[in-house]
Length: 281
Image (cartoon, rainbow, N blue to C red; front, side):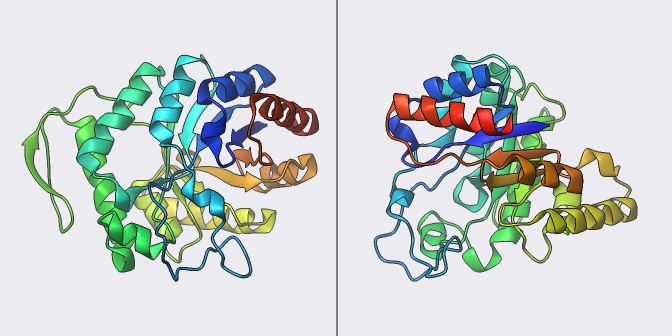
C-alpha cells in the first residue's frame, strides 16, 4: 500500500531536507509540496476547502515547491518527490521543462509532476494565466513540455505558447518523461488525463468517487487506444485513517497522500510524522 505525505503550511518553518529524510526513514512512499507563488490581498474568489469560502492565512506562506523538493532530494535516496500541485497556467513551460528535468535527473528519476489550474482567479491573472480558459492553456503547456522533454529540437505553435526550434537540456531521467498527474474533478478531467496525462490526482473525493472515476478512465482508455494500467490514481490530502486509506485502495487508488496537522518546529514535525506512520503504515 503506497502512502505519501504532504507538507502543511507554513512548510518552510522546517527544512525540506529534515522532513523528507524523516518521512523516508518512516517508510512513506512519497512527499508532496504544493504552491501558490503569491496571495492577492484583495480577492473575491471563494476557497473551495471551506463552507464560508474564506482563504486561510497560511495560503500566503508557500515555499517554492521545486526548491524544497531539490533540498529533499539531496537528503534522501528512495522517497518519491512530487508537486501537489504545480499551477501550470502560472509557469512558462520553457522554464518549467528545465526545472522538472533537472530535478528528475538529480533525484535519479524520483519526480512526479502533479498539476492543476487553480481556483484563485486573481492569482492566475496576476501570474499571466487565462483563468476562464485555464485548462485549454494547461493542455498547451503540457504538450509543449512533452516536446521539450522528448525531442532533440523542440518547437511549439499554439495560442498561449509559441516558440521556434530550441534545444533544452538536461532531459529527464524517466523516459519519456516524469509522470503527469492531473488534479481535480472538473467536467472533462478524465478526458484530459487520457489525452495528455499519466494519472488522476483528486482530493475532495470518496472511495465511491474513485471507483466511478477509475471506470470512466478505463472506458476512455479503450476508446483512445491507451492501456488502462498506464493511468494511476493518487488520492490527495486525506486524514491519517487507515481504514479510509484501505477503502481508497480497494476502490482502485494506487496511492493515498495523507495531510499532517500543522507544525512549526522540527520536533513537532517528527512527532506528527511518527504518529501518522504508527496509524497508517
